[in-house]
Length: 257
Image (cartoon, rainbow, N blue to C red):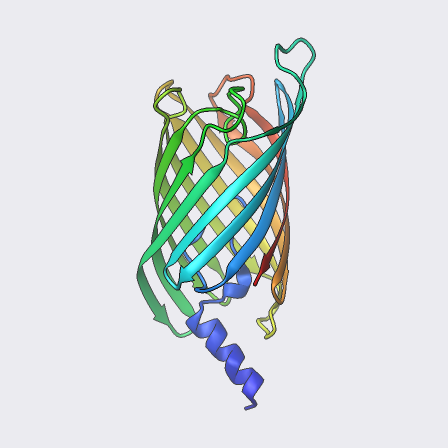
């Protein structure tokens, strides 16, 4: 048994199949301590009110094995339908500050279960267009619990959270469920192709509406680079807002240093 094979066993046992990579539209509690992650996840969103493209610059820092802090700075290209009172063009969107703390971890042979506390602070830097997740121009505060179980054959993650929007009707209960399926055998250095199946359920408590979304994604990870894409659409919704999602195309990349 050579040294490379020993390293691979340690990685996939102790780090719980991290080669599966993080979900695309969901989240998971796996955090690899130390260093920085530079990433982007462009979303092209089609709605009844127009098409909007969010291009974020995201920097994640992991000070330790159980903490993460991040800044997401998005630029949003607005293309409103004819007759809108708003102007088309590129604008700074709502900047987000993310924090995560892993408070539970139980590892087994080539598997792990972990739980994380998470918060996202949405700053009112975008235009007051009311486009959720892009340009609301409203301060929002989100708190959640994220849990996940991973093996070298399958990754499962879930999230439950509440979003507080003091000056708008965007208060919501958020539920997320994702499954990651690796298509290649685990190797070191990392080379993996993953399929993702991700559900999002949002209940807007202030207006008593909900939406159930599904995203089908694919992800390719090689060494420190990851490329991903997904298509998301509503399975069921009672939301009647003009900017309600019809469908989204997501294209992303990340680099670990």
